[in-house]
Every structure is written in structure tokens, then in C-alpha cells.
Image (cartoon, rainbow, N blue to C red; front, top):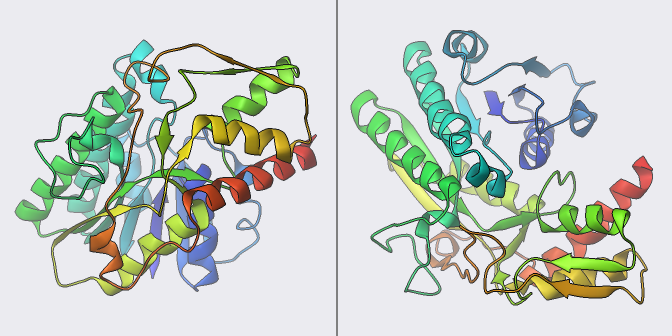
Length: 317
């Protein structure tokens, strides 16, 4: 198939592009390279079935030209810096909601029938039902990023109903692993590079969330997209067993970097920043019933992902 990946030069997108190429698809990546890098696509660039387009999703006409002829869109582009979305309150509106509208409108104009969308567990806000299933509601996200993701889901639903599109929405757990460009592991490494003897941990370190390895994130998305085709609108939690605390992540990272004697300092409070959902557990029964589940637990995924990120950064240095 001819597949378009938005945000394909970023963390999850680059892993997805590699996988799609390995399965024989023709892959076009569109990315403005503000958060991504062509270096993450180095294994794709030599393929005759791969094309990279530097473009901005906010340019509807350019996006439609790039998209034309595609069979499906994997829409992964978004603001990856959630705290920055609070400092500049229009970032998630522009890079999330408006960009998603443009993707859908470009699909409508060019006749592309399918969209696979990377949503997030943050749409649930601070859920009173834990683990949280897909039919939990009402949905009141507490971050602007979460509000944008929820708005995007609404737009996708409306476009499916009005214009006959078919959609697969995935509410991700936290994702970790190779090609990471952001997140707690990268944040910790940057802090340690500046001050190797002290590691500042936002909040109290007891925040706990499920961490899914990026390889299984890609695998889960493709499994559902390839096997669930009876419904016009499909939506699933995409996560794994267990949850990992911020404290545990810090210890796994120090172990991977072979650092000892590092003092852990906490900023205090139950959450890392305003808008941070400190305790997340996802009910993935709906996905498991289809015959797919993650092989790695959250702790296993973090251990593996941390080693991969440290190895990648060491190679670059």
C-alpha cells in the first residue's frame, strides 16, 4: 500500500516507517523537522519505496499535494513537549487540533479513505475508574495536550460520519525505546549531563504509569489496523501490564549509565507539573480480546528502552 506517516521523523513515527517498509509498503513521511530528525530515518532513506517530504501540516494545500495517491494516513504528528503547551497555550491547538483538521480535510479532498491516529491516555484526565477502559466518561483532560487529543478524536469521528472515512484511534500509554526524542528518560539524561552528581526528579517520584516499548506500540497499531475492519470508527487503549514509578525509572537509568553516588532530589508534590496525571492504569481488555497483548511488562519495557536510549546517545557522542 501507499502510506503516509505524519511526524514520521520523530520517535514513534520513525520506528513505524521502518516497520512499514519492512512489510513491503511504499512509505512517505511528512515532517517539519522541528522535533524530529532525518537521522532517525537513516535506515529508510536508502529504500526505493521511501520518500521524505519536509512540510508543515498547517499548510493545507501543500499537505494535500503530498497526500494525494495515498491509501491510508498514519497521523502521529503532534506537540511532543507537554509542559511547553502550558507555557504557550496555543501550541497544542495549532500542532494538534488544527493540524489534525488539515489532515482530515486533505483526506476528504484527495479521497484517502483511512486514518490511524495516535491519541493518548491523557484524554481520560484523572479517571475515577482504574484501570480505565475505553468507555469511561465523561472525559475531562487536565492538560492542553489532552484537550487537543480529545478534540482530534471528535473531529475524526465527525469526518468518519460525514465523509465515509474509516479510522483507528489508539489511546497510548507512555511510550519508551529506541529513537526517543523526549520524555522522562531523555529529560533525566540531559539533567545528568549538566550535573552528574545530582538528579532532579519532578514531583515526589511516586508517579506511576504504564510504559509500552515502541516496538510493541507499532506492533499493536498494525495488528488492529490489519485485522479490525468491520467498523467505521475503532478506538483502543494501547498499553501493557503494570506501571512504573518515576523513582524506578531513575534507578534503571543510573544502572544503564553505570553511575553511582548520584543524589536524587525531588521538587515535591503528587504530580510532575500542572496537567500531569500522576497515576495511570489502562484497561486493555478490549485489545487483548482481539488476540494481541504486549509481551513486555511496563518495568521490562522501561529497562529495555533505557538501555537502548543510553546506547544510542553514547554512539552519537
